[in-house]
Image 1 (cartoon, one colour):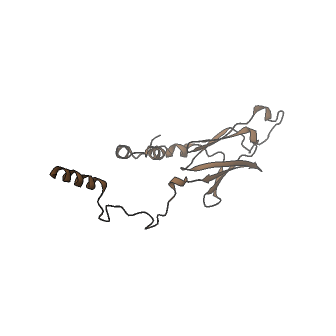
Image 2 (cartoon, rainbow, N blue to C red):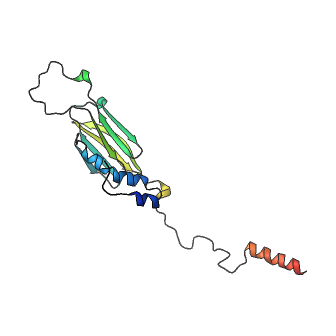
Image 3 (cartoon, rainbow, N blue to C red):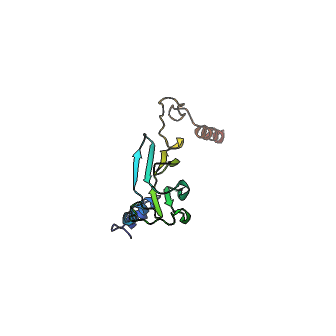
Length: 169
């Protein structure tokens, strides 16, 4: 399902924003999917985050967590052997159906680890900006002045003067 807004004029005049436009166009796809399992997204620190999913009834070996480029996929599949044989449920309110939940991750977000306790799966995330992309303070007056700015002749200008003197001699 596509969005009602046409991004093609922007695609023609921008470079490197393809992923952004794809996310905007495909945003409605995620809204039509089922919201199982429920989750919380928490900010733990300035650059630390935690996703907590309610996965009651699942064991750690029945859940897969995959981190791909800018996407975190959490899926769960109940083993058929683990189903309680001979149990006759009158009402079954704890859902143990298979699921796949996708989370779009911003640039430089890394998955640090996962833990499961009391039916909650906690996935720890951290934003790590590379040193090359961090802002740098440049001190004024720390570099040498250029020869051009001080009125000193450059090498090219000196060579032209020598060539001109050689022609007149």
